[in-house]
Image (tube, rainbow, N blue to C red):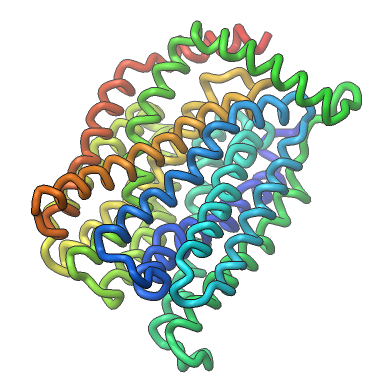
Length: 433
């Protein structure tokens, strides 16, 4: 397979453009906003925040538990693209179906949202693993960062249009804001489906040495998974990095998913929140690419440590915001490092794993990432519930809850510091031979 082929790189990065619309418009913006304003009939403020956190956790648990096995099966049968297509289809259909949910039907809204999260998170396992057949080691940081950069730009463009529809529904001939938001869910599904096409056209997988049946793939995948559990205990570098990644990406995912609800609890309305959600998308586009170059100049690990330290400051700053200006400064800071920490984590991990088992190892990578998205929201929800039961106001509870996420960045940064990339490459080459 020819690496660094322009068509393949284009096809691979366009999937980030496609599915980032879900992360931006749905996960970070419209679902928590619309759930609170439209679907949550009968729920109080604190229960709404707790339910949103649990909804994010359930989908992540399902993907996390199945990710390593799915990755192993895909590796043995060269079925990464087939699995990607399945999860993308699930995400597209479930996201589009939110258009049909009526006011007050929050159980149905939560169910569809959980299923769409499974489609989004599950697809990313196989999307991430395909990078090893697209980019050479020399171009890995850049291609990974380019994917995130295009994701920010694409997600930002569609979210800008959706925000315009929500704020000015009469411009688009909608009867009101509720109809505009419901249509926005449908637009995300259409966008996701349309821009997923290039990855299936231009990114190729190596042909299997001999055809295998579905049952053979499952058996081979189970055998490989058992072998990898044995291997990974001896891959100290991979194990240590995954533990560090698990901790610091926890904070990133939690901030992405819960920031809008935190700001609403502090009394900020949509005229402040929608621009604040847009800022990271357009700041993140050039900065994600910039972090790719920074990784090449300083080293991927050093650039990652800078990003983790920046997020530590962000989580603490978020606990003390007071004014509209504070919200916008926070949005700019997030945009500066969010794409970088995600892109460089992916490219760093690619360097220390066996190439011939990329989907399975990315299954472990995404498993820990998704379990992080379980622990973070549950930590926040637990802090909010505990403080509420002690009589603290929603404002104070939410601030302390967001501030508690800083613990993940501190612990993750310390462990990352001790990861030896050179040793990790040697271990990966040995297992690939």
